[in-house]
Length: 114
Image 1 (cartoon, rainbow, N blue to C red):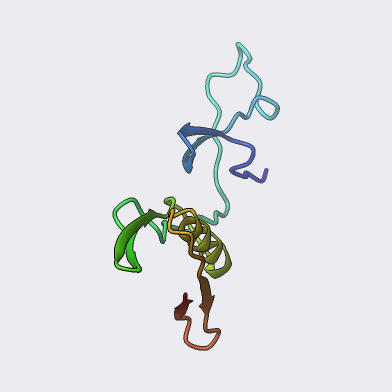
Image 2: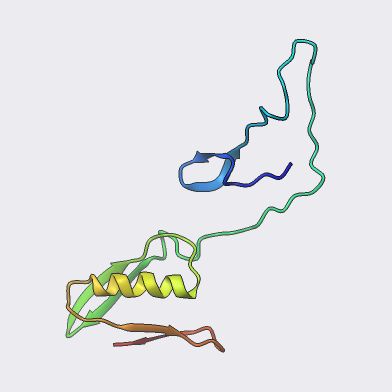
């Protein structure tokens, strides 16, 4: 049996850290069976965390002397998805300006160009 988070029931909202799986097609409820046991031969449990958290998702910036604040949604981002989220929030700032955010493939540093 292979378990995937896509096949389970999420027990804590949108997070996949608490799941329930139904084994109804594998195990049957019969009067003569007192108990059943299942063992795990191997497991792969990735350790993941949000790289943008609710404590670290607010960015303040200045355009022509006025201060603006943007909030990036909590979640896991790679460089491309963070650039999209950042530039979308920047463009929605109400200041009429756009920006370009790129990442240096060697250093991994972002560069913001007005």
